Image (cartoon, rainbow, N blue to C red; front, side, top):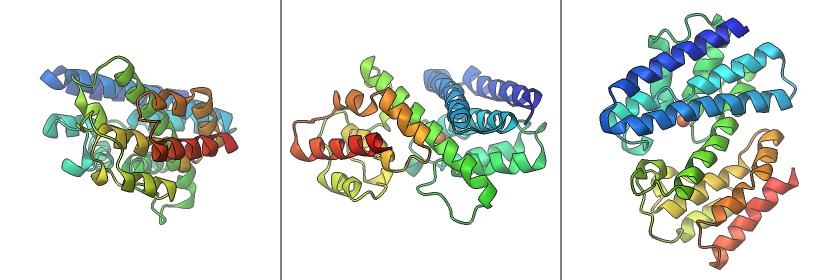
Length: 259
Ligand SMILES: [Fe+2]
């Protein structure tokens, strides 16, 4: 897409998010966090697409998808006050629906519109659907990586700044007490993507998001994980002295370092 189309998407997105933020009440800070997350994911999309050698207009489309990928979070928070899809709605599906009904993509060509719609719809799918048009695949893979990289930033910030008592939504309202569950560790060691519904405490959630190391699609994403020392940073908040935890972390570290 052209620079002008990207600017239009960005403008529409900010208006859309600010509309929800203006009436958010107690959810205001979480809505603002999502608006900042979308902007950061857009930057990650641009960085990943650029370092993967994409063309200028493709990079613009990647950035637009970054802005829009989480539009479903705003109605989800407004209506259900949670980020837990398994206790409310699938926010990818809800975002897909919101985009089709809104002005957000009015200035975008039909084919790019479809790419963005599928990117939004499946960015959070447990696994990538295998019946997507092949040309859509690389966009979906890019948004999944870009999103996950920024989730690391958001969760780490919340731990570092002690925000979790006040905003437990960031760790899906899971208990800050408790050790990682052995079954979850075993699932990760078998490189099977764990399901959110199996999480019992915040430590489980941290291990689940670190297990994305096995699912990153672009080498550039793993490079960013190395540069940001993601495993080391999260290790501060995990019981690394427990053998199973220490071992799964060192396997994840190897995965990131091998690319
Ligand atoms: Fe999302």
